[in-house]
Amino acid sequence: MELDEVYSRYRALLFSIAYRMLGSVTHAEDLVQDTFVTLQQKAIYQDEGHIRDLKAYLCKIVTNRCLDYIKSAKAQREVYIGPWLPEPLLQEYTIIPASTRAEGMNPFQTIELEDTISYAFLVMLERLTPVERAVFILREAFVFEYDVIADFLGKTETGCRKIFSRLKQKMENEFEIEWVPNAKTEQLTRRFLQAASTGNMAELFQLLSDDVALYSDGGGKITAAVKPIVSSQRVIAFIGGLVAKGDSLGSVRVVRINGQHGLLIQVPNEASPTVVSLAIRNNLVQEIYMIRNPDKLRHIRLR
Image 1 (tube, rainbow, N blue to C red):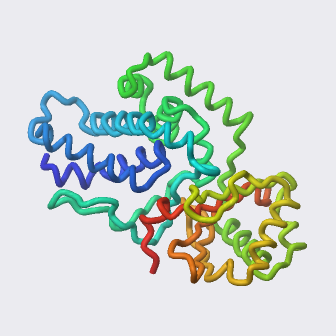
Image 2 (tube, rainbow, N blue to C red; image 1 turned 180 degrees about the horizontal axis):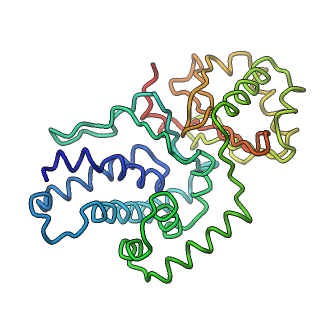
């Protein structure tokens, strides 16, 4: 099988694994490209006789590339200013290539992940250890068998089963992530936007859970709350302060973020947009994620 054919067949799968592992579009793209460069250098695509499963082989490479990257990035996370949030995927928006690719390899022009995990679930994955994240993603999202996962990670099959079983119980007890139908998320998102932009705090109060939490990721590069804002009163006061600035909301569009509806905000005096994702539970906004760090939005070409 030629490299172009291998690339076309497996790049979306490898990107999906890497993005879930890293929470970064740009770094996921880079590691996918690195995986194919490794494949090219070893000329495996021309001699697959000793590889029982090329798909599994590539997934193993990209998974371990991700684990290595997470280890190297750990120190940077420890000194990160404010909450760290994953990079959002905006469907139907052009993705800017993160780096120059080898000639003949088409960059990701658009990302279409209709079956993607929600942004809230991606945030939850960040609370797991790298190995836990790998086991959960490979089993839950991509249905790899435990013996294959064990081979990927250098673990025992029994160990991987125990990790996954523990995580499933943890999800049920601690992380109540709810996938809400698109029609409902769009309706609630538009109500949220209308209430916030018009200063209708009474309506906004009706949309928020009592213990709602707002996370704002500026990475120390743009104004953002450095600590989570918790409780409906405090979140409403924070939003009210933004509205009071007059032009803070700027131009706002409802977009699809990781498969569900959210907001894309462009302010005239800011070069980078702000992306807002809402985590909804029981028809109320439970968490608000504001991604403002310009480094995490460079892959989005506004149009």
